[in-house]
Length: 112
Length: 112
Image (cartoon, rainbow over all chains, first blue to last red; front, side, top):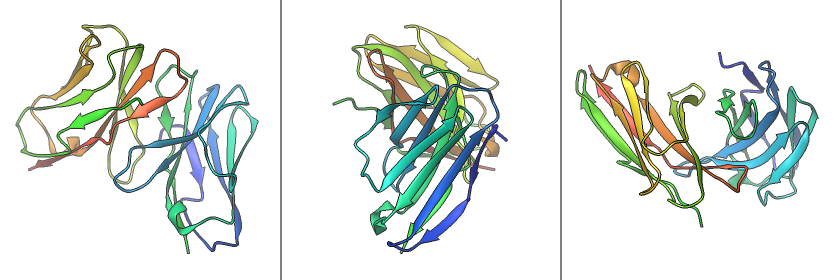
């Protein structure tokens, strides 16, 4: 139990669906991250929020839309995804942008 | 282009063997080097954050060294146990960058 929770753990969605991934951290951290993990690729940073402000948007397609309503919650809104977006999506948090990151269990997303 | 290389890609050892693997990273503009352990069906877990050239850190049977001038870090496991089986990831943090650059990891399997 890392103090970072993610829901749902598994998600299957069609290309026309709209869904959201949720992440919550109970560690009092100020930074939160979304990562994408695809097979045989390094962890790919998607978005970084520090003190609820987006500080990094790593050229992610607009069909992925992050939202950080407060320092404990992070969402990833998904719409009109492609099959190649199927992957494990990991959320992480850290005390600040320089410290070690604590990861949630991930959401395994399948786009059909 | 910042690149982080890890070797070997995978490793099989017998219980009780000691082992080590390598992380190579850019030798310029260094800020920190992170090591994480990722067990199957769990979240990545931070092992070490190393910032000083020549630094050595230890956590139980696992230790790591850092050479920022030549751009490498070694992770050592003494007397491997089956519960050490995991993927070991390193990530490089450049001084002028907010994000971690991740390696592909070394997958360790310890046979009982």
